[in-house]
Image (cartoon, rainbow, N blue to C red; front, side):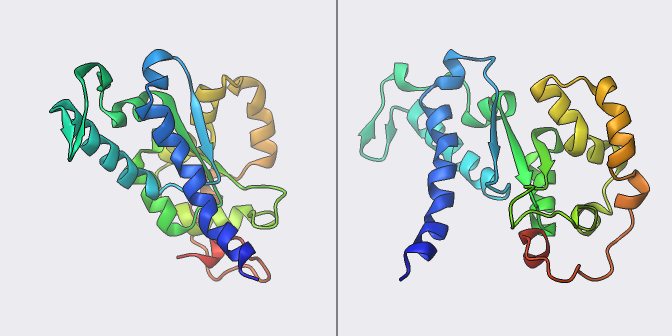
Length: 195
């Protein structure tokens, strides 16, 4: 009877481990132009994981991590956090205010906002309210980075071609800057149910 709950508990583990596999196995060292986007995994966990990998890297550089020995050729030339900065971005689906704070720590240049449409846990039809709840105190440059500029850079989108659509359908800076008073009824998105 608890299988569904166990699934929910284990999905993050299996999703998060991709970051360590790609970095620590040297994929980004061998393919420095590779761009990897992690989505629907949150943001807050990334800093702890990078610190852990950087710690292992520092220990490996001495030839040992505890009882395990590492030859010099097994040690990556760069710190794991440096590969993250160069090769990895995060698609932040339905962030909560706490996740929005984590975006600032990870770096606004590394994150792209997403609504998770059309999934049940997504923010639609209350995406604007979600943005107001999480980002009303952010400056315009940081908002443009996570809502537009980062995706343009990562995916090579034509910003000029998309500008009319964004102007017609996207929220304005003033809309996002208006703090949310109360939560939308009947919305179970983590954007509204998590702190």
